[in-house]
Length: 125
Image (cartoon, rainbow, N blue to C red; front, side, top):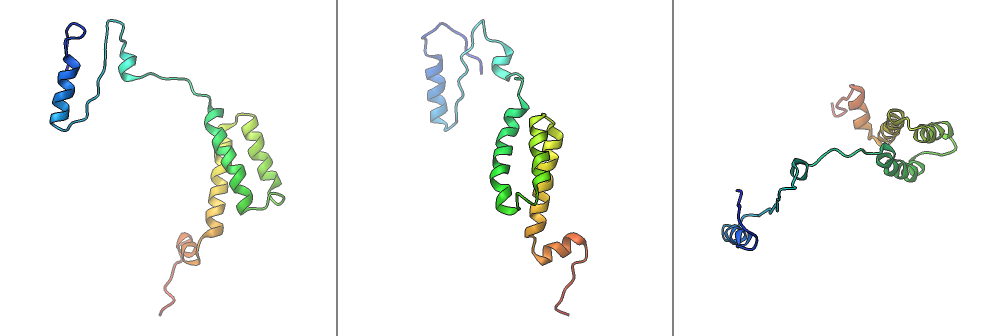
């Protein structure tokens, strides 16, 4: 609904009252001659991938040593550090995915491991 009229004539108040009476949520958009379509639709904002990957790296650095030995995985951790430092984002994400895959494998139950290998069987026979 688009309401047009002079300032202070009660357009918003009437609609707020009606919305309250029928139990509907109201979103008010105050528009003017200067309102642009991007004000309503939004726009694209450049995003620095480093800012998106930084929380992943931080959490990875906290969680990895809880599951794996840092000394035994020094080369892997170096690759993670280098891919982040050189902004090789595809490589960085792939390395993190590999770590998650290995963690899942490490903590799989026997039944889950057998099912993953496609040779699950019933020992009750």
